[in-house]
Length: 120
Length: 108
Picture 1 (tube, each protein chain N blue to C red):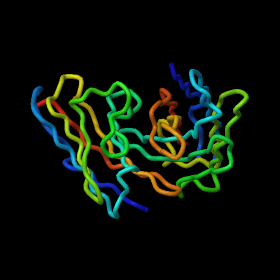
Picture 2 (cartoon, chains in turn yellow, blue):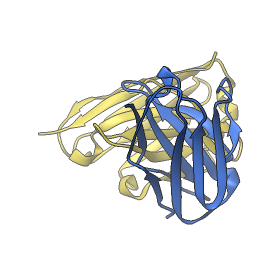
Picture 3 (cartoon, rainbow over the protein chains, first blue to last red):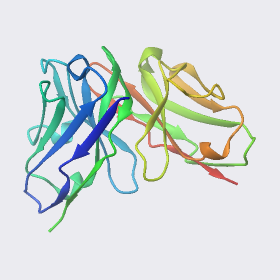
Picture 4 (cartoon, chains in turn green, brown):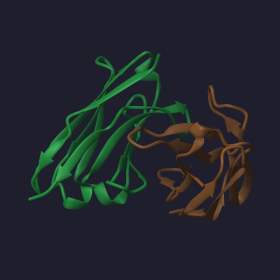
């Protein structure tokens, strides 16, 4: 059974930093692209960042470019999101998700989400 | 960037009725790049349909997807109590992904 466990969220002041982690199990992590999606309180889904299986290709939504860094450690089956210069508008539940298949940016497994709150 | 507009915002229906949800794109979307998700309160989204019309694993056949170009539809043939939720469409391109704003299907 595929399992994704998100962690690392919390309360941080504007300008602060956090590192989110997503521990994966139940599939060959190194074979799948992975993605972070976020959801502000009471709002819809927003794609944040994606990384290819070997980390060769990395993508970000415009609003986080230069502030967030996605990475992965295939030896630990873990996905990361390093978030710097956090803003109030980054407040959201952050979900890691597994891509359905190579070349298909559909997400067939999701973590439970971790809440990031940016406030003074 | 391709934007997705979902309508209606809220759909009030009774169990057993048919639900028709719309997703309209600002530019043509490949049918291989369009998906639908279901999200219940306090839960992560769940993939229902990918490639515009293919059901994901373990998704009941009362869920179906159709459409092409800029107009896509998710149909739930007969609503079950567990189908009342928010539904999102999603598309992906070369280097970005966008979600629609969602349609809430509520019990009438």
